[in-house]
Length: 267
Image (cartoon, rainbow, N blue to C red; front, top):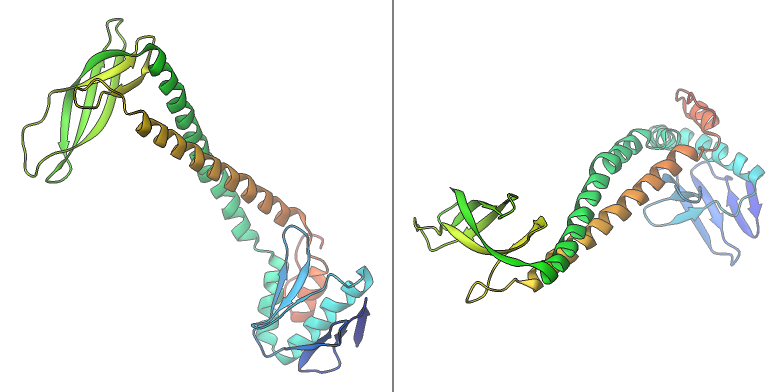
């Protein structure tokens, strides 16, 4: 059997390999004993036959020819290499539904919440930087608890009550000299009186400056990674949806040829 489509020739005249000839007359063979794979694009539905060296697209075939090709291909492949043909047919019919479910859950339960958290934190950083520039007042935040992480690093829990009664709480890492036991009891800060969530430790030689470059860096870092995870989420959801909705052509017939159980859904 030979299929001709727009100058492309697909031949099943040998029981040992699929023969393909392009319009320029160049010929390729896909031996059934090789590690062949059948790939289907989630976005376009294009079917490709792939070996270790070459890749063959079936996009040139008409709908009628595309109906004949998979049956003949799997029939010849199954005769020559039944185990490989059966595995490839299972992968084609199953369409990675188990993996798609896991990917969908990962997008919804992991990637999306991470994106929302990063974008929300970045938005707050930008908002607070603006508020601090306009309305910051100085204060002193107390160290209420210190936990030693290693010989030089302490994790400090900080707390400060504003004159209006708002409580500011935070956590900082402090790098000290090795094996030191003397820790500061407080740090100078700047805060916004009507928005106590907006505060920053004062730095510089006199403890009278805010490290604006550091705040911009962390805000931009959160924004970029938030957008990355958001794009990853939507791309992953689109891929999963395409996998679920795009039917695998002639899946039932292919399953029957290689001796698989027919898929329950209509292919």
